[in-house]
Image: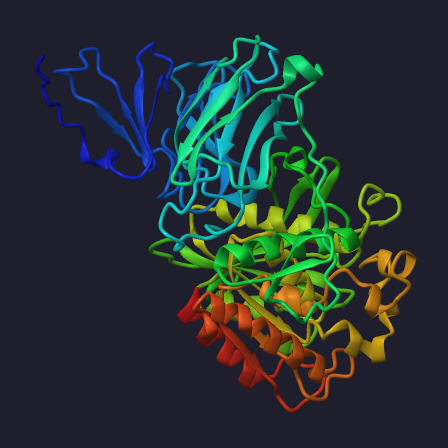
Length: 558
């Protein structure tokens, strides 16, 4: 046997490759992270035509799946970020839907961004409904700890697409343990019981995931999770390994397990993070566009979940020559909401979206529910949420989806900044979304015991976390989490904290206690220089000199 080499155009090169018919001509094309090669009639001697029609990610999965996701008779793309966060799909649309030769338009959608390293993905009919589901698992140490979320517990999931909502419902194959897969998983009925099992291999081992559909009549979807109780939230370098059993945290793997407990504890107070089925298309609407000296300000709205639109401003610097860093800019407690950070009112010292856009950052400033243009009733509109805090977190995750969908945004350089309400809103969001690579919080928190001498009633309105009152009786001793853990859960990402010494809302001693405790975790990751804290001598403000330092810090860290 001999092999003949056929060189393909170099544009296809990169991390991630797929194979399938993209233009409906009956010939299978080649797909890469920056476009696709159209197959000629004669694959050996003909010219493969390059189409730079889309950009996926620099670390797209192997394979990139070519599949008609939405059943509209043209193939779409599904991929994971093999060395980063999330699963995505690219919807193919035709400019003229009645003309099969019409130009294709590609629209990016997020599937799930709650976990990392989906290096290899596949399609298989898990639930025997006649249509394949998406199957993905987390790779173990693909780059020896250098990638985001790489130390997090391994997982494996399956996803069923809903053609009515254009979203995906997640089912559990294996959750937060030692089993995942990194390369070339296979779907096969290994035990010959009439349903498809998964065989997955990786650097952590070789695993069989047995499908229990036949035995249980329904596919597995929920796994009951034990939420450990940590009596001292400042004692971060301990890990619960069972009831009343604490072991020392010695490695980043140990910390990742402790971090997963922090997320569970936060959800005990805030309610569960919404699942992937609420991740419907963003359907961005532009309501107005205004020109300024250095950027264009777009007044927009986007769909965060079925039945709800978030008002926002998107600031795009002029004359960008390449994708730029982006910032999610969250406002304080103010009736004008998003208008303050974009410079349309309020305090000049809190117009940080305007200032950052002038420096070349793409900035997105959404309204917090019930502020600005966002008319929201937490008990009626948000009855499916336990807290306003979790609703805001979900909206912000969708805002990051929006930023990642912009061609002028570098999807790997997105950060978050906020003051007061925006300060802790940003912290909470960044804990649940590792796509936020740098976090700035001004006057955003203090340890619960230091908040008004331990009276937590200010945290308990419908806008925030009512369970603090209803379940935990405003008692910091009963709280399942504290800000020591919130800050530590961001390690090793860069974090800048501005905590004025005279802030009457968030007492500075409690900030210092949280920072000192969290620094142990940053040290564990070899990232002690990534946790920065400034203590200006002023009241509840974001001083000019601190903001100047923050902007320089962002230039260096994002």
